[in-house]
Length: 233
Image (cartoon, rainbow, N blue to C red; front, side):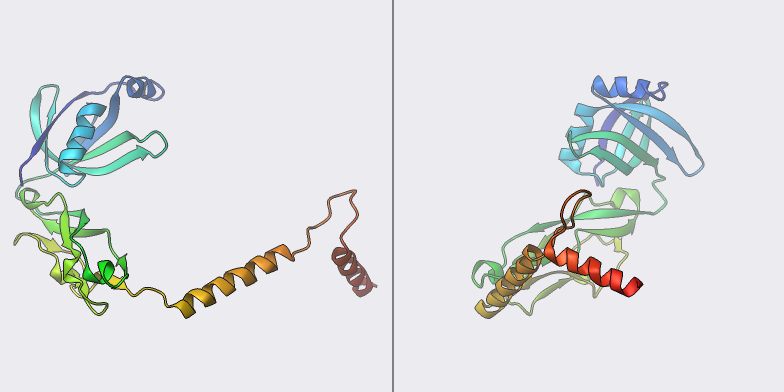
């Protein structure tokens, strides 16, 4: 696997000062590893976004700190603000190229299933990531899942069907189902579902709203209070 490069610089700021760096287009980060001291860093938000877009979150990175000391790292943990769609923190893990690592790899679904296109079925994805073990140089950025092999509702894609390099081991039972296509609902099933929804709505609409302090209780609520009072006596 080809490494991608990323520049970083040493970060001395702590606490609230970190937010100032974020406002200037920087992402606070930290790098550490086995028998490697942790270091606080800054990486440019624009550079990091380009890296993610090009290679994904599961990739081997040549991390240069302060213009020197290139290190082989992977993204161990990534934090993101879902509202602003901005990365807020990155953990890099320094790896040894001769030692295997474990990493979750994203599944990318490609192709078109005849069961979906022609029979109106619904694609069911049981997994969106799988954990693999391999040497850092063999780490895939993603794993493609070709759903065109699902031609009928009896066809399944299993973990054992995923195509990965010879040096990559998927840490899951080979018989685990990755994807299938469920048949469309029949008219009877849709009618039953509609009737159930209507029945549930009726129950909700028939509920009695509790009276607030100072308000007159509803007739149903008044009866309940009398019953409770009778039981106490």
